[in-house]
Amino acid sequence: MTTPSRQPARVPARSVWIAVGAACGLAILAAPPGADAQRGDRARAEYTMVAGRVQGATEQILYILDGANQELAAVRWDRGNDQLTPVGFQDLRADATRGEGAGR
Image 1 (cartoon, rainbow, N blue to C red):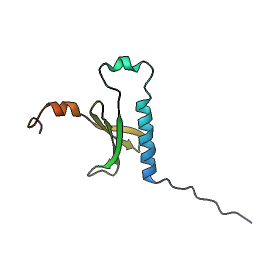
Image 2: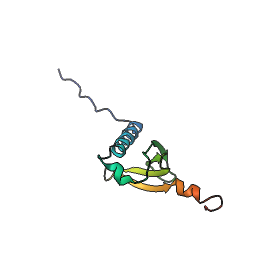
Image 3: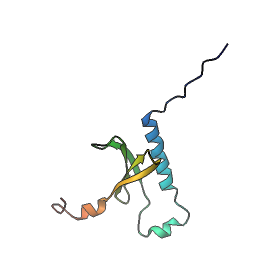
Image 4: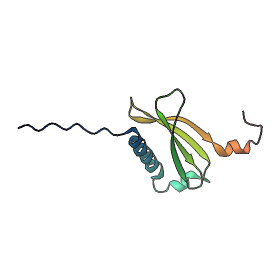
């Protein structure tokens, strides 16, 4: 009597994004010893990560906000190269100091 072969379970896309976000957070937070001297006047980072969609793209974007240093980075998962690709960076502190009407 033969036993039917089991098909491997598919991992939902949401689980993949959670794993990617956790890996990014760990990689960012795992700074080498003595990194404080290299950062200068930067505050210890406080990260918040949120996944979102971008108009005209099939991949989701992972937004990483450093609340202490007021910086925002966006990355996406490049399936072809199996790596995170930077999408953009914004210094929110610089935006805030420009004042009203100094933006777009």
